[in-house]
Length: 296
Image 1 (cartoon, rainbow, N blue to C red):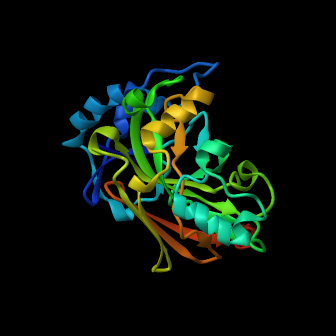
Image 2 (spheres, rainbow, N blue to C red; image 1 turned 45 degrees about the vertical axis):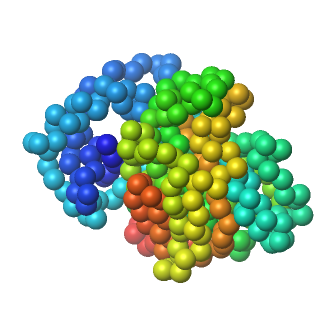
């Protein structure tokens, strides 16, 4: 099953190049009262919503996928976890590119651990990426994204995949500089997720997926998740040793070699086998502010 969020509050079932509006399935979510439980309620109750989504499909309004403004399929994770240096070829390119490393030693993920990104940095493809510091280098990083489906606390790798709700494509946008990664990667719009959530049952092996990224039609990144240093199951186990993972929590699995800068007006197209394509426009923050000012 492929689920998307469109027009802000609508839920869609994606089939080929069309979307069935199954927003009525959200009525089956339990009412929540303060204090709210951690995590994304839709993801937490996906097992309940799935049958209702299928029931609604036949009578649902059918819309062209290309006509919709897609938001992030994950709305309220308790955390976004980043996996640095999880491809050997990316480690090598960091060693060679001083603009990327800024003098920091390049080490593997087992040596340096994980980091957190602000959940407020999450957007979908329709929102696009906004460059707040265009005078500095801002890089694209395509990544397989794991979305947790249930609470996971110190789970062994052998059992880790059963805790996964699904997968999507992610852009871990990065401002280059000497600051800590959590600071430079938590800028508003610097975590792009989409185009939809593909449930775990549709992905036979998350460690065997082709992924690529192009900017303005020019290929920059191409690899396969088989090249991950820590594969998906081991990464979940690694993360759950340190953090309690909740439904909807996002694990960005790392990026391969080929990272590079983007600028105002660039079009990013990221693709992962079985997960679709993520088309994202890059914009300058000043341009947005200026346009807003004229509208007033």
